Length: 65
Image (tube, rainbow, N blue to C red; front, side):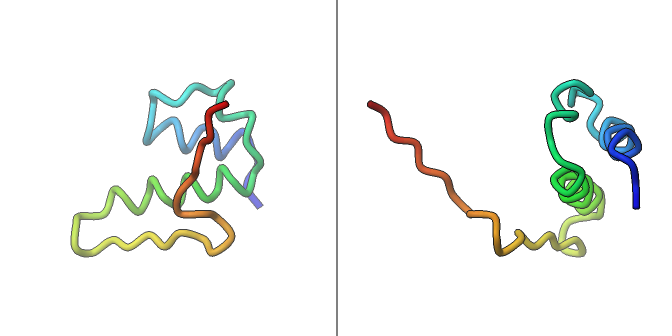
């Protein structure tokens, strides 16, 4: 199992604009999922395929008061 710090380092290698403090707010599972998504995006189009986990909604609705 990869440590949270290692996941954050790996994410920041691919996406240096992601702040370490901001990433630290997420769970290890969420960081692993994001890193997997980033690595998939590095593969040329037409070859890569990232599948959204079934438990994660595809769209969010925000209601204003």
